[in-house]
Image (cartoon, rainbow, N blue to C red; front, side, top):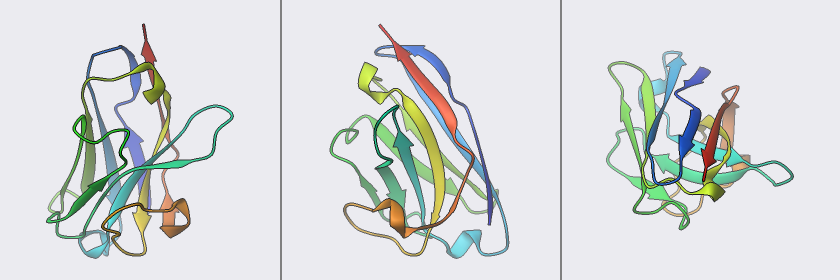
Amino acid sequence: VHLVESGGGLVQAGGSLRLSCAASGRTFSTTAMGWFRQAPGKEREFVAAISWSGGWTSYADSVKGRFTISRDNAKNTVSLQMNSLKLEDTAVYYCAALRRYYSNYTPPSAADYWGQGTQVTVSS
């Protein structure tokens, strides 16, 4: 599975951004997907995950109620809608193909494939 993220950029606090991840590979529609992020000097952390069907989603507590993960298996894409952005959301965001879906926290070690990342910068 090859993953390419897009949609990052600079946004003011309180604003919104939508990240997209385009996937290639025949197994996308049967693969759980996730978004992670990594801020400077910090470890990569879980943001959101979605099951292969899209019927199940999970979120980190820090983004719950503000971010929404979705997927379109017909288009081989997974998206992350980010609303009410905060300064602490600034990070490089990575799309990942997961070995399986986790109903709560998804560790970065659960990822089989990673995208190259897209920068999200939230300014005051």
